[in-house]
Structures are given as C-alpha cells and as structure tokens.
Image (cartoon, rainbow, N blue to C red; front, side):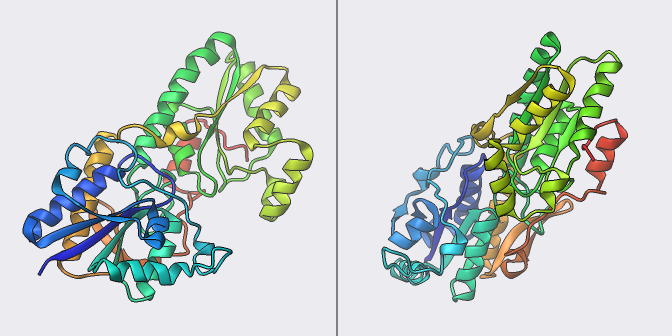
Length: 360
C-alpha cells in the first residue's frame, strides 16, 4: 500500500530547505520503493495546509535542488498564537488543517521549520495527525538539537560580511556596528562574531552596559587600534531594558526615536568617543543563497533520518543532532522551549579568553 507523505516548509526561509526536502524524498524512494511512495507538496507552509494548497509531486520535481536556496514549496509565517483563533475569515485553522490532511489521505506530515513551526506541529500531533518535524532556523535556537540546518550557511554569510567590513573599518578608522539576525537567541551573532574577529559581541543572553562598550572601544584606540568591529544581535538589550517587559522596551525605544539597538549603540559610541561609527545591516542576506557543504550534508542526514521514522511509523518526533549522532526528540518535549546561549558556555568563555568584550 502506498504511503502518502505531505511536506511543508514554514516560517522564515533559510539555506538547506530544498536539500532537506531532497534528502527526505530520495531516502523514502530508496527505502520504500518509488512505486510505494507519493509525495504531496503543500505550498506556503501551514497557510497552504489550511487553504488546501496541495499537489501531487513527481520524482523529477526534486531533481537539481540540492544546491538551490529558498524552498520550492514556498514558505509563510502563520503564528502559532493565532492557530486556535477563529478570526474575521471565520476559518477554524486546526479543523481545516485536519480536513486537508484527511482529504489528501496523508499517512504522514513533514514540517520543516523553527520554534513556531514545532509548536504547531506538536499541536497537530496532539490532534491525532502523524507528524514528523525537521529543525530549520538560522537562529539555531531549537531545543534538543545542537545544530539546525541553515545555521552554518548563515554564519558563513555573516562572517563574509564582517570580513569585508574589516577592510573599510581599518582604512577609515571607523567603528562598524554590524547587526545580525537573532531576536531571542544570540547563537548566530556569537558564531559570526568569533569567526569574523569581532572585538565586541552583544547578544540577548548577556545584557550589556553601554559604558563598558565605550570603554572597550576606547581601550583599543588607546593601544593604537583606531577601528573596532561590533557584532550586535537584533535582540540584544542593555541592562536597563533587560529588566523591562517587551512592551516597555518597545515603547522606550519608540519614545527615544531609536528604532534598533544597533543604531543606539553606534550613536552613543560616536557621542562618547568622537570616533566615527557606522551601522551595517546584512538583514535577509543571511537567509539567502545556496547552502554550504556542511548544511547540505546535515540536511541530507536529517532528511534520511526522517524517512526511516516514516518507514518505522514512528510519529510525533522531530529529528535532531545529539553530539555526533542523528537522533530524534518528541515534539511535545521540543514545543514551547528555546535553546539559548549559555553565558558561561564554551563559546562565550573562548571569546572572552581572546579578549572579546560582551559589554558586561
């Protein structure tokens, strides 16, 4: 009897989505036989599952996508907090997703995504659907896995940005403040900062003191180093903001006319030191492009593991990297949790030992 497998990609895109889709599909065909597998592609994430934007795909649809950035299925953000709300369109989202699953006769649903995706995947699993998750995010903040696909490619891209910033910073004796994606967790900024040779790294998990940041810049200048590179996570906050609730922080920044923490850091350094400070925001460049060799291998490993879970009918799990091994965790254990940087962890200690300041 044929297995019908639905696949969707949800949330922010990242390199490696297509490589993971390819890994799952090729492994399913190999393990269960081409004639025993049907792949149903679901467009635009959970939105497509709600709206029944599905189609039967052919093996040829997956040719040549290993190196392709983005996602052939399209992606869209459908916030978990709204999943169980019946809004103005009068659509019961959970019921509609279950209906689409049933109408297409799916035996399993694969969800490729980050924290929000895993929350919804767990919700559907608890509703009785056979669901398997695959951890995707450049933030690397999914609980239970030491790495998610897309992360290392984003680190490579961010590192390239800082490498290029170094040359212009040195030439003009400027303070360059580089904003890296990451609202809640600072993994991407931490790794990019270390790999790019940043002098100061500011992440959400270590609230900074602006005076300490200025001191670090001045200390470099006093030693004859008239430029500095500061890697700032978009979710970084100072010690005053860290004591506030999110709404209070947003209101405080709006009232001061400071849209981002990156702009505030650059402005205050220039005011305090007189050195020219500029901001650089690579933004969605970090999500784009072909996956690195590391991510292609990781995506293929994850995809192949998901195929074995389907073959064994082991549902309600998400694939993970545990040490050097590919494993899986229960969706119920992963949902509602975030993997944060340990302020006393190896990466932070390593950075401090080579003189990197965290502004604390």
